Length: 216
Picture 1 (cartoon, rainbow, N blue to C red):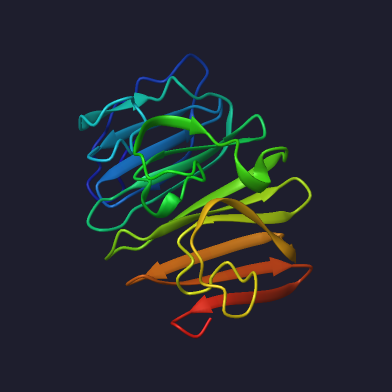
Picture 2 (cartoon, rainbow, N blue to C red):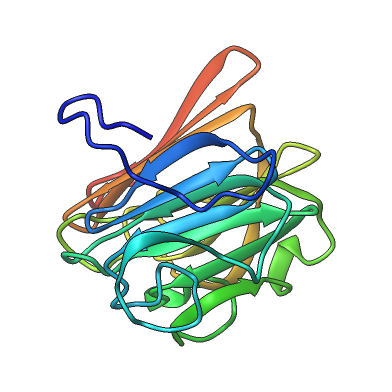
């Protein structure tokens, strides 16, 4: 690919017939998703966020061989690089990188250096179609929002601003995924700033929101 500003050509060792369909940025890392459902990663790797099985930084793009057939990918980071990623493959959710606040739904805070399939909580028997890695630029707080094939939304991780929107006054961190009891989702947008978060849900032409500062 060629960078539009500097016209620098960067070689990516793609497979025959493979081409890049999306380009993603973290603060210190980059990712490509290809037409064959592969992810290529490069850059900083302090938290295993490249998904290559270690914490060694890369200066060329390398394919993550432990996950294939990726149909949705998301990356986010916080705390100057406490990065993590999510991907959907064959209807299952995978996550890797920094795992503070139980955000992977694995009932622990253990860092993953390779894609980890998530099988606990409300998503265990669901077909997942999209998943979003939401993190704070200035702190290490974060969470995951996952959407299943029936448009239900599931959350895991820190909920300190009530961004899960489950109930009034609910700011409880979840260590496995919980399904929102009523909300259906066409599109989801989430953001975090200085540990505060806001969720935006678009469904049936209407916009819903939850979170904010300490009022929910």
